Amino acid sequence: MSKPPKKGASKGFDAGKKVKGRKRFLLCDTLGNILHVMVCAASTQEREGGKVLLEAAKEKCPRLETIFVDNGYNGEKFEDWVLQKTSWKVEVVKHASSFSRYAVIVGSEITAEAYQAAIAKWKTGKKGFVVLKKRWVVERTNAWVVRHRRLRVDYEYLPETTEAWIYLVNIRLLIRRLAKHYLENGSGAPLYC
Image (cartoon, rainbow, N blue to C red):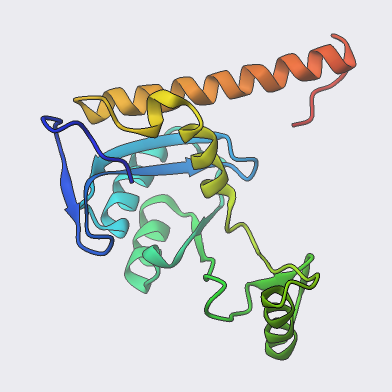
Protein backbone atom coordinates (compact mmCIF):
# COMPACT_ATOMS: atom_id res chain seq x y z
CA MET A 1 0.00 0.00 0.00
CA SER A 2 1.37 3.39 -0.90
CA LYS A 3 0.03 6.89 -0.46
CA PRO A 4 -0.20 8.87 -3.70
CA PRO A 5 0.14 12.66 -3.95
CA LYS A 6 -2.92 14.70 -2.96
CA LYS A 7 -3.93 15.24 -6.57
CA GLY A 8 -2.93 11.77 -7.80
CA ALA A 9 -5.15 9.79 -10.12
CA SER A 10 -6.94 6.63 -8.94
CA LYS A 11 -6.75 6.98 -5.20
CA GLY A 12 -9.02 4.91 -3.01
CA PHE A 13 -9.82 4.05 0.60
CA ASP A 14 -8.91 0.64 2.01
CA ALA A 15 -11.59 -0.07 4.61
CA GLY A 16 -9.57 -2.93 6.15
CA LYS A 17 -6.44 -0.89 6.86
CA LYS A 18 -8.30 2.44 7.15
CA VAL A 19 -5.95 4.32 4.80
CA LYS A 20 -6.22 6.24 1.53
CA GLY A 21 -3.84 5.38 -1.25
CA ARG A 22 -2.98 2.78 -3.85
CA LYS A 23 -2.35 -0.96 -3.82
CA ARG A 24 0.50 -2.68 -5.59
CA PHE A 25 -0.23 -6.11 -7.01
CA LEU A 26 2.95 -8.05 -7.81
CA LEU A 27 3.37 -11.35 -9.64
CA CYS A 28 6.81 -12.78 -8.84
CA ASP A 29 8.68 -15.97 -9.52
CA THR A 30 9.98 -18.04 -6.59
CA LEU A 31 13.24 -16.04 -6.56
CA GLY A 32 11.36 -12.77 -6.12
CA ASN A 33 11.89 -11.46 -9.65
CA ILE A 34 8.92 -9.42 -10.82
CA LEU A 35 6.93 -10.90 -13.69
CA HIS A 36 4.06 -8.40 -13.73
CA VAL A 37 2.95 -5.34 -11.73
CA MET A 38 -0.36 -3.55 -11.36
CA VAL A 39 -0.95 -0.41 -9.30
CA CYS A 40 -4.55 0.61 -8.61
CA ALA A 41 -6.77 2.37 -6.08
CA ALA A 42 -6.68 1.04 -2.52
CA SER A 43 -10.42 0.38 -2.68
CA THR A 44 -9.78 -2.50 -5.12
CA GLN A 45 -10.46 -5.86 -3.50
CA GLU A 46 -7.63 -8.43 -3.54
CA ARG A 47 -9.54 -10.97 -5.62
CA GLU A 48 -10.61 -8.43 -8.24
CA GLY A 49 -7.12 -6.94 -8.49
CA GLY A 50 -5.65 -10.43 -8.69
CA LYS A 51 -7.97 -11.31 -11.56
CA VAL A 52 -6.90 -8.23 -13.54
CA LEU A 53 -3.22 -8.93 -12.81
CA LEU A 54 -3.41 -12.59 -13.82
CA GLU A 55 -5.45 -11.82 -16.93
CA ALA A 56 -2.74 -9.40 -18.09
CA ALA A 57 0.08 -11.81 -17.15
CA LYS A 58 -1.47 -14.79 -18.96
CA GLU A 59 0.24 -13.93 -22.26
CA LYS A 60 3.61 -13.14 -20.65
CA CYS A 61 3.94 -16.31 -18.56
CA PRO A 62 2.82 -19.33 -20.62
CA ARG A 63 4.87 -21.85 -18.60
CA LEU A 64 3.42 -20.86 -15.23
CA GLU A 65 1.72 -23.75 -13.41
CA THR A 66 1.06 -22.86 -9.76
CA ILE A 67 0.28 -19.54 -8.09
CA PHE A 68 0.88 -19.11 -4.34
CA VAL A 69 -1.43 -16.52 -2.77
CA ASP A 70 -2.26 -15.37 0.75
CA ASN A 71 -5.61 -15.41 2.58
CA GLY A 72 -6.86 -12.30 0.77
CA TYR A 73 -7.38 -14.46 -2.33
CA ASN A 74 -8.92 -17.41 -0.50
CA GLY A 75 -12.14 -18.76 -1.94
CA GLU A 76 -13.37 -21.29 -4.43
CA LYS A 77 -14.70 -18.64 -6.81
CA PHE A 78 -11.24 -17.11 -7.28
CA GLU A 79 -9.54 -20.49 -7.61
CA ASP A 80 -12.15 -21.66 -10.13
CA TRP A 81 -11.83 -18.42 -12.10
CA VAL A 82 -8.04 -18.76 -12.31
CA LEU A 83 -8.27 -22.40 -13.34
CA GLN A 84 -10.89 -21.63 -15.97
CA LYS A 85 -9.20 -18.53 -17.46
CA THR A 86 -5.53 -19.49 -17.21
CA SER A 87 -5.38 -23.22 -16.32
CA TRP A 88 -3.08 -22.37 -13.39
CA LYS A 89 -3.42 -24.02 -10.00
CA VAL A 90 -3.94 -21.70 -7.00
CA GLU A 91 -2.43 -22.63 -3.63
CA VAL A 92 -3.40 -20.50 -0.62
CA VAL A 93 -0.61 -20.10 1.94
CA LYS A 94 -2.14 -19.50 5.36
CA HIS A 95 -0.79 -17.01 7.90
CA ALA A 96 1.21 -18.20 10.92
CA SER A 97 -1.62 -17.21 13.27
CA SER A 98 -3.86 -19.96 11.88
CA PHE A 99 -2.26 -23.41 11.89
CA SER A 100 -2.67 -25.37 8.71
CA ARG A 101 -0.91 -28.06 6.74
CA TYR A 102 1.21 -25.30 5.17
CA ALA A 103 2.99 -24.54 8.45
CA VAL A 104 6.49 -25.87 8.13
CA ILE A 105 9.50 -25.90 10.44
CA VAL A 106 12.81 -25.98 8.62
CA GLY A 107 11.43 -27.63 5.52
CA SER A 108 9.38 -30.49 6.99
CA GLU A 109 5.65 -30.71 7.74
CA ILE A 110 4.67 -30.78 11.41
CA THR A 111 1.77 -31.58 13.69
CA ALA A 112 -0.33 -29.01 15.52
CA GLU A 113 1.45 -29.81 18.81
CA ALA A 114 4.92 -29.31 17.33
CA TYR A 115 3.74 -26.07 15.75
CA GLN A 116 2.43 -24.74 19.07
CA ALA A 117 5.69 -25.77 20.79
CA ALA A 118 7.74 -23.92 18.16
CA ILE A 119 5.61 -20.78 18.61
CA ALA A 120 6.01 -21.02 22.41
CA LYS A 121 9.81 -21.33 22.05
CA TRP A 122 9.90 -18.40 19.67
CA LYS A 123 7.87 -16.22 22.06
CA THR A 124 10.20 -16.99 24.99
CA GLY A 125 13.25 -15.99 22.93
CA LYS A 126 14.63 -19.51 22.59
CA LYS A 127 15.72 -20.95 19.28
CA GLY A 128 13.01 -22.17 16.98
CA PHE A 129 11.77 -20.71 13.74
CA VAL A 130 8.51 -21.20 11.88
CA VAL A 131 8.66 -20.82 8.11
CA LEU A 132 5.58 -20.70 5.93
CA LYS A 133 5.97 -22.23 2.50
CA LYS A 134 6.37 -19.52 -0.20
CA ARG A 135 4.83 -16.94 2.14
CA TRP A 136 7.44 -14.18 2.13
CA VAL A 137 8.56 -14.11 -1.51
CA VAL A 138 6.35 -11.19 -2.54
CA GLU A 139 6.89 -9.36 0.76
CA ARG A 140 10.65 -9.64 0.30
CA THR A 141 10.33 -8.32 -3.26
CA ASN A 142 8.19 -5.46 -2.00
CA ALA A 143 10.91 -4.67 0.55
CA TRP A 144 13.50 -4.58 -2.26
CA VAL A 145 11.26 -2.17 -4.16
CA VAL A 146 10.60 0.26 -1.31
CA ARG A 147 14.30 0.33 -0.48
CA HIS A 148 14.52 2.70 -3.41
CA ARG A 149 13.64 6.17 -2.24
CA ARG A 150 11.48 7.05 -5.24
CA LEU A 151 9.07 4.21 -4.42
CA ARG A 152 8.96 4.49 -0.65
CA VAL A 153 6.26 7.11 -1.04
CA ASP A 154 4.17 7.27 -4.19
CA TYR A 155 5.05 10.63 -5.76
CA GLU A 156 3.58 9.85 -9.15
CA TYR A 157 0.34 11.27 -10.49
CA LEU A 158 -0.49 8.23 -12.63
CA PRO A 159 -0.39 4.62 -11.39
CA GLU A 160 1.23 3.59 -14.70
CA THR A 161 4.25 5.74 -13.85
CA THR A 162 4.62 3.91 -10.53
CA GLU A 163 4.44 0.59 -12.38
CA ALA A 164 7.22 1.75 -14.70
CA TRP A 165 9.41 2.71 -11.74
CA ILE A 166 8.85 -0.71 -10.16
CA TYR A 167 9.94 -2.39 -13.40
CA LEU A 168 13.04 -0.15 -13.48
CA VAL A 169 13.94 -1.16 -9.93
CA ASN A 170 13.57 -4.82 -10.87
CA ILE A 171 15.83 -4.31 -13.90
CA ARG A 172 18.42 -2.63 -11.68
CA LEU A 173 18.33 -5.53 -9.20
CA LEU A 174 18.73 -8.11 -11.97
CA ILE A 175 21.67 -6.23 -13.53
CA ARG A 176 23.40 -5.99 -10.15
CA ARG A 177 23.01 -9.76 -9.63
CA LEU A 178 24.40 -10.47 -13.09
CA ALA A 179 27.33 -8.10 -12.56
CA LYS A 180 28.11 -9.66 -9.19
CA HIS A 181 28.03 -13.13 -10.72
CA TYR A 182 30.24 -12.03 -13.61
CA LEU A 183 32.82 -10.49 -11.25
CA GLU A 184 32.89 -13.54 -8.98
CA ASN A 185 32.93 -16.27 -11.63
CA GLY A 186 34.28 -14.72 -14.81
CA SER A 187 32.54 -14.62 -18.16
CA GLY A 188 32.50 -18.35 -18.99
CA ALA A 189 30.71 -19.67 -15.89
CA PRO A 190 27.02 -20.65 -16.15
CA LEU A 191 24.57 -18.41 -14.36
CA TYR A 192 22.32 -19.95 -11.70
CA CYS A 193 20.33 -17.36 -9.74
